[in-house]
Length: 431
Length: 151
Ligand code: SF4
Ligand code: SF4
Image (tube, rainbow over all chains, first blue to last red; front, side):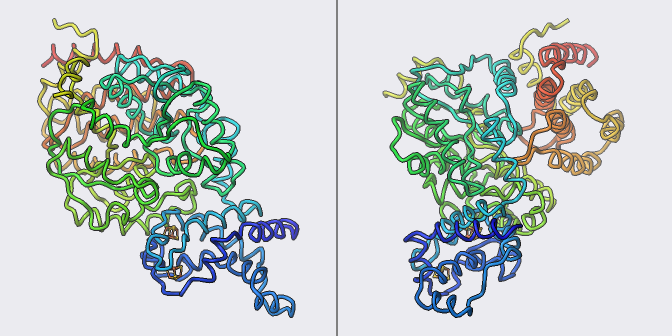
């Protein structure tokens, strides 16, 4: 790494320091509550994995540039310089061992949003060339191909064809003036193609019109994960342009945690304006269908169920009651984990961490928290609503020899859907 | 002889089978997509399936090994997808349907195995442009008809 690139990285740290970051560093009372909230510290006991330690280069940049004492120290040559070696070491701390789950932010007594600061620190790391190779590849593919996993329009069309055959329902690409534009995550289409079939069945039953954009079908935002606002903006803009061209009323984010917060909350800030449409998570949409009597289900699951809240969905996105209301439709044997909803523990693979191959041993270690939580429930089936969580949970469950099927909530509901004519449903809903 | 020409009939017919028949049929669907993977990986399963005295414990032991294959072939978030490998992943999922505990609730193993086998064909077609999911579907109807005849 050249000095020029190091300089670029440090400069970009300095540029990242905005009012919330400055107030964070000056208001932290070193209570350590954030450390106890972080699964990586919790499972390893290693202080380098505390949220505060992850931010150390950013803290020093703040101190040296924005505090009188720090400036003086710098002038006198007494301050510790940020080095290439240190930033290289921090790649593991800021990417592999932080899922941006925001559990630390939630517990901080002085209200510091530590996950936001890690996100800012990732911006500096990415600018300085310190981002992990896996995330760089994913971001490049997202910009060039339209999917971080290289899912082309040809592959999407094959998946659509498969879903059409399996359901007997036509799925329209680029249909304008429909109610909903459905986004998908490559993870889902590649690992859980049943999700698309479930959507087709549910929307047909509910009598709702929908489409998929051929130029903006991907929901995930690698720019957010790697820490590049420029890439994040390109990906959000792609969706906004398509939704506005197709004149849809609502864009639906799929069973993917970070994709939801990226398009719903970060998107308008990234492009600098409001959208002409609403953004909802698929579970919010299904809950609204249910409330309107458009999601009739039959039968109950025989297994004992528990639910893993995806962090971005529950803690950051506030979608907590919806999955529970939906689960109650298909189960009378549902049990909560000790910490659930906004207090849930991360699966260990969010925020792009699961795309980093070399992070796997640490991820599996951190999974022990989730393992304990799941085992305490004595549930026999684990339900979730994020394709990435699902894969990470599958890996953890397999690694620790737990006999536990993991299912997506949308698919679970589709399995219980009653095949009734629309008119009859409307009549029932009115009664 | 029964005719099966669509998925509705296909599923309804499978729904009437016992869990042990489901398992046998699931294995036949799996065997039909062995060309998409390394058959050797499933030799133990095929041997077990042909053994009338196989125990649930033997299936449970195999389930752990096949579950590992499924997890190891998952496409990880953000990786560049290898479509042929993804076809193998769905063959592994089809195989997992064959070894699941026959006594556990919510089992529809033959139907699941058939669907995963079709998905495997679909992914193979993305990879090679040749595999044909429609042909696989028709082949599955024939396998079921033959199975009912042999019952
Ligand atoms: S965001 Fe989550 S993983 Fe990252 S430091 Fe905070 S608690 Fe730990
Ligand atoms: S919880 Fe907040 S105040 Fe306490 S150490 Fe962490 S950042 Fe500082």
